[in-house]
Image 1 (spheres, rainbow, N blue to C red):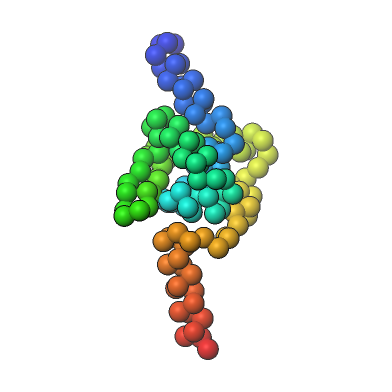
Image 2: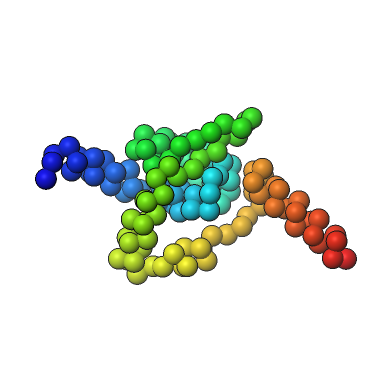
Length: 127
């Protein structure tokens, strides 16, 4: 086996071997998210999340785009979800269990604010 390919594999696994980074990637299954969204849903401080996001970005697993004040992160290699799903299976957890664990706290990010406004509009229409 080529040393370069095994080195790249090791770097990939090194980037994945942290619970916060795995949690971030699992949050990004649903599409892009800003740091405030990740902060509200995962409970980590913004500075800590930024450090973990930088490691994932350096590993080439995520990319970002800026919209005004917000920076949105998205998985750049969706194949990583196959690897994460396999690892969940090895520890006896399903992706359905992972989705059940996701809460929906009050999140001030634009992504959630739009959902809240939509829900309020739907509630007022049904009255």
